[in-house]
Length: 159
Ligand SMILES: Cc1cc2nc3c(=O)[nH]c(=O)nc-3n(C[C@H](O)[C@H](O)[C@H](O)COP(=O)(O)O)c2cc1C
Figure 1 (cartoon, rainbow, N blue to C red):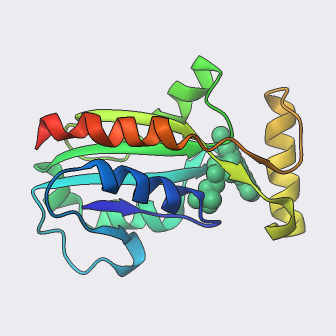
Figure 2 (cartoon, helix red, strand yellow; figure 1 turned 45 degrees about the vertical axis):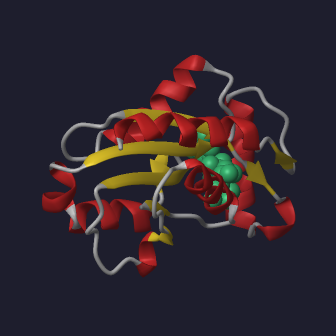
């Protein structure tokens, strides 16, 4: 199963690309729709907002903590940028620190922002983050389908 949380859709796109590369029966599901986690392998993906995973993902992890603990699992985070190493590590850590048990593989992918979709508060928040890492503000898409698919492919060795 690839379980994702997504507010503006980029993490969902990435989850679907990853799901396509994993062999066998794969369900790609929004955490808000998941009924059970009776799967051999779980991939969890969330964007980072204000330095944290989306609340729906944190809640899902907390609710299923006992079952997730002993499962074979990998994670990915989607963030504004993945060029700065310290930021990459910070963003991965923001998610892995709430995951119970071992994580086989963790990745960070750059996402996208469409300013037209954001309310004023969101726009301010993302712009102040972009300023803090000296990146241009405004809409962008840094989605890299190939990299996401390669990550998906690399997970087959854990199945
Ligand atoms: C309001 C807002 C806050 C954000 N905060 C962060 C942040 O703290 N760190 C970061 O790396 N990216 C941040 N981003 C970038 C998002 O992680 C990125 O746009 C991601 O692709 C959004 O995923 P989604 O389309 O699945 O919701 C922020 C974006 C928005 C709109």
